[in-house]
Image (cartoon, rainbow, N blue to C red):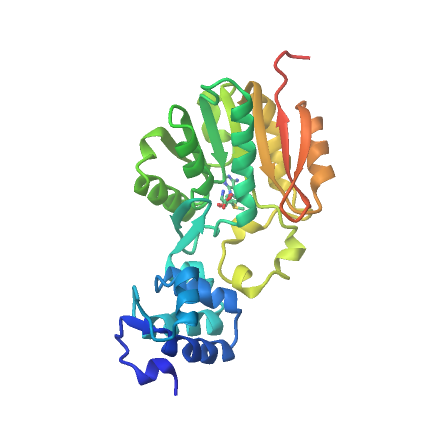
Length: 305
Ligand SMILES: C[S@@+](CC[C@H](N)C(=O)[O-])C[C@H]1O[C@@H](n2cnc3c(N)ncnc32)[C@H](O)[C@@H]1O
């Protein structure tokens, strides 16, 4: 019998004594302990320090944000249908933000946080007032657009997205943070909707789809069954979108403007070659936290060659 079934399904408090046997029993069904704890935190509101306290002092109780029954239901659905927990709970913490997520928009990944850090590093090295205009190509949940809008409150931003469902999530997250007024949201493909500001963009970030088509079918079911193919599949070699974005960058960036791209772990030299071939300069590869070159930066030359 589960700790949950010993208690009322609507129980709103959880004691240390009830937590551990209940957690053990649900983990026996499958799944990773870290994922279960994530669910307990995001759905139930029981964070790491609270779990630690409940382990040390089993007589203590904490208030739950939802019932044990609801948490158990979400866990079972995650296991049986391989639905990402973020979609089940509807939120995803990312950097210092909490984003609303759902099917149709890629769940923001931790490595993408570094793309923002690279932009911030560049801004710190320049005089204040940079960038005046930025764009996020393929905005998805709106994670990058939101981070940029908060970091550069004086700047005008553009979020470009070809999927109506994903753009809806961008909109929801920008509205919720109260920054939608300074980020224009454009439905369309890569550079095309930005044509009126071509030549004026100081900073462009993109985390485009970059997984080679043949690899998409090998991805974990939790990703391949539920996250949008449009956000994952980068064509035969994974570089379709990077090729297109690189080719248009010279025209769209302001002189000296910076393009920052995320790419697959084994695409660094191909991406850097594409950026050089597109007439950009100062092409630099950057590593992720695991030491893989996962990002590339390049500038439009300040003075035409
Ligand atoms: C890897 S996801 C990144 C989403 C978000 N920026 C992030 O970092 O989590 C790529 C995004 O590009 C969008 N996309 C794909 N093709 C596109 C195109 N031709 N033009 C604009 N956006 C596109 C997808 O819908 C998806 O939202």
